[in-house]
Length: 198
Image (cartoon, rainbow, N blue to C red; front, side, top):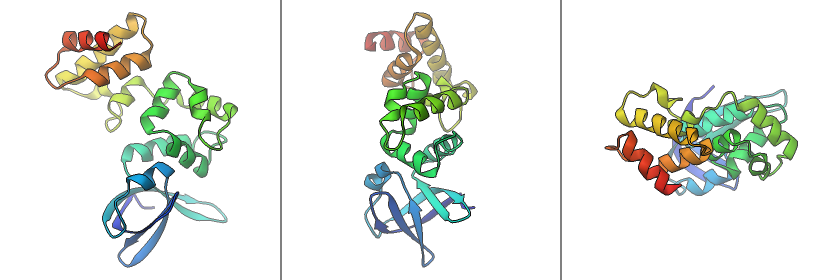
């Protein structure tokens, strides 16, 4: 219904935001982590939204980044995770942390979110593991690093592939490469720096 809303922050609660847009106050459910990132009351903010329509309710769910919104849409496709469960997960973990947990099959990390049990966490990993690739953690906006044409994009891919070929877990390789990457690095420099980090 709405892709995003830009307006003034009217009220902030733990999991709720009232956003004033054109003299109308929109009641938007937000993850707990978003409330701390919002600007003060009276300031303008852009909120990416998801509209949930059910027989008994019409609700807006809001996020500060497109990446969080994309992750939320993925989460609510999992059986047992509804709109509130998806919100709870994104309140407890960032989109990148959820990707890492899925890639490394870390059900315990996912189950730490309020309202998410171990069985639901395992189902989430099963349902999303084919939808999330290691490249998504590098470039969530593009969906895949492989699509990038820059030298750094290719260097990232090759460095992660080399580290996984050496026996490092994909998530550790990804974290190390992300931690050391710089614009002017080639594959060799990136790989050496990542190995030192590991």
